[in-house]
Length: 141
Image 1: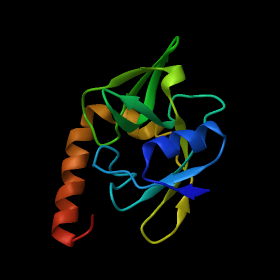
Image 2: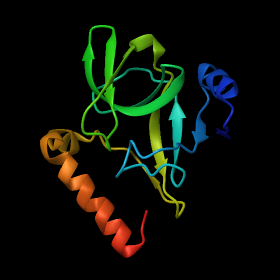
Image 3: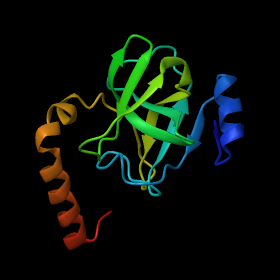
């Protein structure tokens, strides 16, 4: 497995069937992946399922979001830390899926399909707000 921040190199390694570890940025995958704190291990997908955390190019950047629907050859993605707004990409555009989440303490975790979190979408705004407030008060990211 190779660590990389170079997008061309990352795409090449994934196309060769190798695993890549990278550190995502942003807060769109909170609370499960903390941008610039946790890292993820990626591999080229053999298949794509609802609940996978996928990496795909979207509007000139990469997004690392959860697959919430598959509509024919279109994949609909949404970040876990987002309450509205989705990205639609072609199945063939998906470069990788997350096989492990590496937490700041070095522990490796297998990603879940996020089924319960997806069901909580109607109240996710309040849960995320509460989590952020908790983290501000107790100094955790």
